[in-house]
Image (cartoon, rainbow, N blue to C red; front, side, top):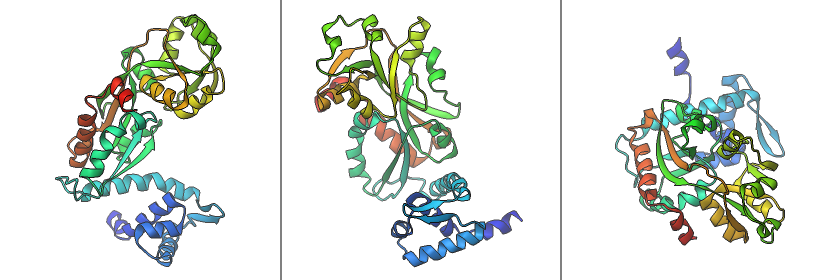
Length: 321
């Protein structure tokens, strides 16, 4: 019975469904499949019959998936990712490969890490695509399921807090890329610039906080709590750039990794201040599933990132920008 069911499955139809879920458009899905719109519409009709569900409804905003289609989406990602790995040559050739790497990246890696290896990848692997997604609470699960190839985010070095801020499963491998410390950002003419910059002064301010990995607190907050101290958070935002932008026209203080603080301070004409308390460094870390340990394509990308970022330093970032 199991094989009889598999024999009835048309993988081309599943690929059509996958792209329709991504694009929410018959036209765009047809373009990516190199098919006519009518062919994709016929495939959609077959899919509706196969799953006994309409799968999509047409709206002014494009195709909207049904609950059934949304449930299928994650399973399709995993299935197609495994199929891609099976069909990829065991000896990865970057010059001829059309591999689509799926990466989960914390926002601050884009200005910090990508400039160091993207040019090399574009030159050495002209047909390879990096499909990047925001690092979130599900990224490690997606690495485990094969839905993603690699992830990069910040990891606290203090063992006491590392598992609180981010628990890493045993089947996830990791490699440290770059260590960084925290600094603060305020607007020019901020009243605090006329005061002595101490921890007490820092705690008297209102702060803007970025929600990272689904968490509203960073290691700094846990360390302060150990001393019975707490920051006054005025607003929590989803990304670093929004937090920095708020500092341009408010008296909010933003605390973030120093490489980002120095870069955005130049762009937005803001003032950089040291963090007035001791805090262990954090490390930007590369993650992958142990099943990808000897995968040729995954090894190539990991080594490319590691080799091109091994001499990374705060001074290098400052010089380049």
